[in-house]
Image (cartoon, rainbow, N blue to C red; front, side):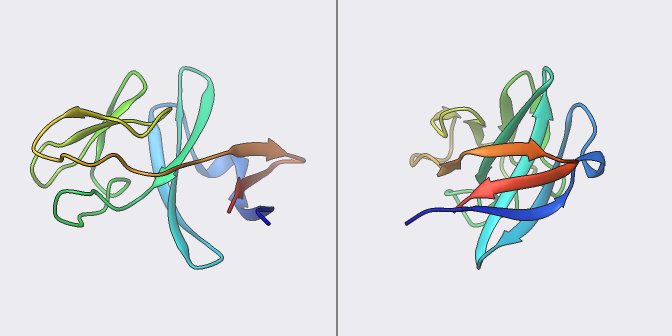
Length: 103
């Protein structure tokens, strides 16, 4: 059964930023865009690059710095090739000043 796990402090991620966390062994990125938090797999499905490290956020999409693959942070769907497979998304919340992700 999935549960919310605290991975960091809410102040660690500013608007338009993403940061990677280990959530019970899952490599999860959390981003803040448009005042909302998004949780998604930190690993690009194209060639395994990290999305949070060097990825560029545009609206609610994140683009991998390695080859430009783009993903919706909200749904995980591919918005720009070369990636062909979506990334996983995770419910995320801010509670009592902590960032929590459901894994």
